[in-house]
Image (cartoon, rainbow, N blue to C red; front, side, top):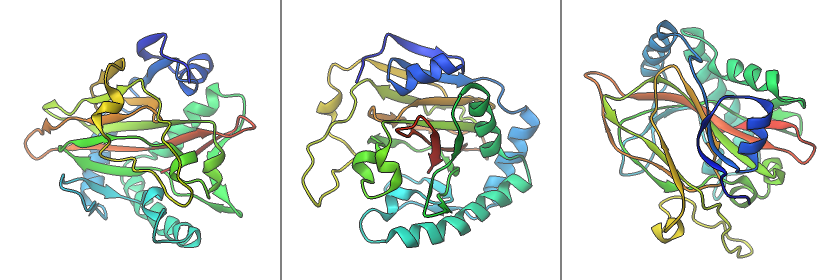
Length: 259
């Protein structure tokens, strides 16, 4: 994959989206994606929602589901079944605030010449739009479906981005750092390489870019690059409340979304 020609943020245009998919720029930021009032309603609704917590040492709350949780012990049918309930849980938050997922997809459709839709398989849609609430760190990891999920339709993509809308920001810290070192692990038949808690030797000497999660904005970056989130300090009664998903480019240049 290409190295960055510029480690900074760009506006959302067709050209910049192509550059990001091809890993030639570090990030895209959509400023003022939502108003302060919409952010406040979204954060309040999320905190009242069906929040669950990952089985990791850092406390990360989420509403929805992540496809990678189905890689080892659950079937594709179970994932697609559970996606319906997960989307309903997120829809409940949208009903009390605004539909961040549909708005993001419309922004992409406005600049991308090919269709933009939820990923689907056998006529059944994937889940997209996972909501998170935390002020804790998230360890160094990579998201790359051709390696993480080779038996799913998303395993055929040739580029993968992640977008996050921030409804509530931290008092300090909580920056996301992306390292320009595209993941290319050794593949052992029948095994899925570890993609979370990566060895830091993978990023030694790599160019990097850090961004601040600012309420009201969306930030998009290439998730094949290792990335991590630093710990932060929440405002009184607050958290870092966000929603996001992946965006993959299919071989026919369609863009598909999933979480």
